[in-house]
Amino acid sequence: MTDRDADTPTEPARSGSPRAGLPQTDPVPAGARTERPGPDRRGLLRTGLATGAVTALGLAAAAPAGAAHALPDRTITLSGHLPTGAPDFVLLPFDVPDGVREIAVSYSYDRPTVLTGTPGNSCDIGLFDEGGTELGGRGFRGWSGGFRTEFTVARDRATPGYLPGPIRPGRWNIVLGPYQVAPQGLDYRVQVTLRFGPPGPEFTPSYPPERARGRGRAWYRGDSHLHTVHSDGRRLPAEVAAGAREAGLDFIVSTDHNTTSAHGVWGPLAGPDLLIVLGEEVTTRNGHWLALGLEPGRFVDWRYRARDGEFPRFARQVRRQGGLVVPAHPYCPYVACQWKFGYQDADAVEVWNGPWTYDDESAVDTWDAQLAVALREGRPWLPAVGNSDAHSAPQVIGSPHTVVLAEDLTRAAILDGLRAGRSWLAESAGVGLDLTATGQGRQAGIGEQLTVPADAPVDVRLAVSGVPGGTVRLLTDEGQLHQESLPADGAGTVVWRTTASLAAYVRAEVRRPRADGTPGRGNAMGPDLPWGPMAALTNPIVLRTQKRSGDR
Image (cartoon, rainbow, N blue to C red; front, side):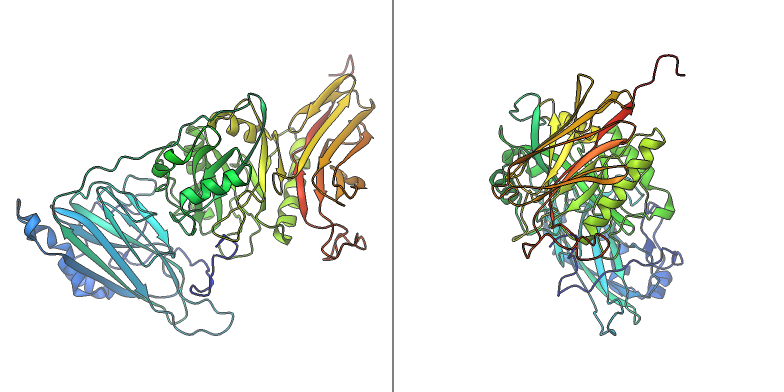
C-alpha cells in the first residue's frame, strides 16, 4: 500500500479534522504535557471513559514491592465517544505500576454507514511512555497508524512500529489519531493489558554502517522512500534490502511512517554492496515529508499542522543531524497528503513518486516554476528527487530512483550530492543518461553552473540509453526549446546550442512512448499529451552570464 492508496477497502478514506481542543476534562489533546496529575473520577466519567480507566489510574498502589512476579495480568478498558471536530490527536492516560514486564494493547472503533462522499471513521493509534507527550519530547514509544489493531511493548521486544525498552512505572498514554470522524461520531474501545514478571534482556539495536564499498567519485543509484512492516508496508526489512539489490541500487533510505523502530534492525542487512541510510516519513495532517539521514533512533515528531508553526523547528532538528528535509508527493490526491507547509524549509522535493501519474506532472511543473524564480532572484534552487514509495508487491523497489554524483558511497557524501542537486531521476537501472553543457572551453554537468559571456555559444549534449522510441525534451526557463525522438534501440545523443542570455538553465526529460505507440496530437494542456510517462528527468545545469570588464 503506497501513500497514494493508503485507503484500502478495510479502511475508509481519510480526512483531517479541526484541531480545536476539547475541554481539559475530556481525553487530553496530544502534544500537551501529561506530567501533571490526571483527571479525577468525575472528569473521567464525564468523558464517557469506562470505569476500567478509573481503576487504571489508581493501579500503581496495587503492586506491592517484590510481589510483581506473582500478580496476574490486569486489563484496563478505555472507551469513549469522539464527535466530529475532535482534536487531531487524543490522549488516553493510564498508570503503569512497578513490576510490569509487558504492555499489550488492542483497539477497535465503530464504522457506521455514511452517505457516498461523506467521510467515514478512521482512527490511528500510538503509545507514549512515562517520559511524557510533549511535542518533540522523550516519551515516544511507537506508532502503527491504522495498520494494526493490536501491539505489545516489552524491554526485549516490541511489535514493529514500536520501540522495545524498559517498562518504567508512571503515567503512560495511548494516543488516538481520529483521522476522520463520521457525522455520527466515533466510538472507540482500547484495552491495555499489563503483564507482570521479571523483565527480559535488554534489546540491543544493530544500526547499519555509514559507509559501503564505493567507487570513489561516481554516480550512485538509490531509493530514498521505502516502507516495511514497521509502518504500513508488507515487506520485511530483509525483503526490502533484497529488492534493492535486485533493482541494482547502491543505497536506500528507511522511511517508515512516524516511527524509527526499523532503525535498529537494518545492520545485518547492509553490506559492502548496499548502503542503508536511516530516516522517517513524517506524516502530518498537512502533507508528508522525508527526514533523510537521521542519526540512529532519532525520532521526528509529526503532531502539528502548517498553521501551528512547528515545522521549521523539526526541519532544523533534522539538519542539525546532517540530514535533509524533503516534501514527499506534494500533489498526492489523498486527504492530508498534499503539501501545505511551503518550501522555504526544504532541502529538495520529491517530484516523482512511484508510477508516473498526473500528480507527478503537477509536481514537476511547480518545481520548474520555482526553479526559474529562484534563479531570477539569486536564491538557492530546490533539487528534485524521485522515489518508489514502495510498500508491498507488486510495487517495484527502485522505480523510480535518484542517481546521485557523490564523492563516495557514504551517508554524508550521498546526502551532500542530493543537497547540491547533482542528481537525475530514473525509472529503473536500465535507463542511462549523461547531460553536459560546454562553452568557452568550460564544461558543467547536472547540478553545476557554467559561467560564460552572454552571447557565447553553449553546446548542450544529452546521451540516453534504455528508452526505445522515447522522446527527449530539453527545457529552459522559457519552457521546452528542443525535442527529438530516440531510435528503436533506445540509445541516442542529442546536441543543442543556446546561450546564457537565452537560457538561465537547461534540464532534460526523457519520456516513454505513449501507451498506444503514437506520438500524440500535441495538446500539452489536456490529457492527450504529446509524449508518454517519464523515463528520466534531470536537475538543471545553471547558465550564468559572465560580467564584462568594467561592469559593476
